Image (cartoon, rainbow, N blue to C red; front, side, top):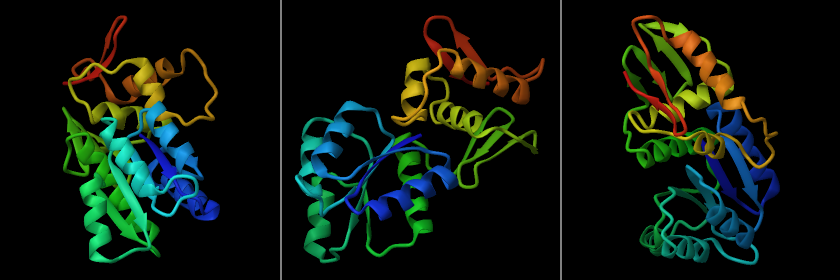
Length: 222
């Protein structure tokens, strides 16, 4: 999953980004002011935006309104120091999906972020199930027939993204766009490597889970 943080307090933005990378295995981009954040949100496919309200050049509420008026439906979690009822109502009416008031606990922020991403993908439970595979998005664990399976960080990212879209064809380009931030080094066969690793660890002669559709992409289904 790929997350955009729009927050002008650099240290806070870096702390949130580190928590999302280390605790949720998300790819994270950071914008330190509103206009850059709006441009990035309009130019890239994100699974979640974490948006501060008090931003230079373009405030968060205006950014949110412009984003929604342009048709973007990315889930938005707002960071706000304002706890007045009127401000919260305005945020939700403008298209915010959830909010946390500063100061906040990083664990709570992470839990809310994961929940919004699940809802955005049409999922409600933290555990995703496909055939005999269980993917626990809360603790990033994977079990096959009840037994723990050890995956690399990127193998887990690929599997979780596919599991959020069971039965759908997901192109290699889509995977690349949602699993990496701006700083990734581009290698043409990187997705194939992770798919091969997942097949080796999760499939056998009786269970085929990841199907390749030549020229289209991959599909996760029993």
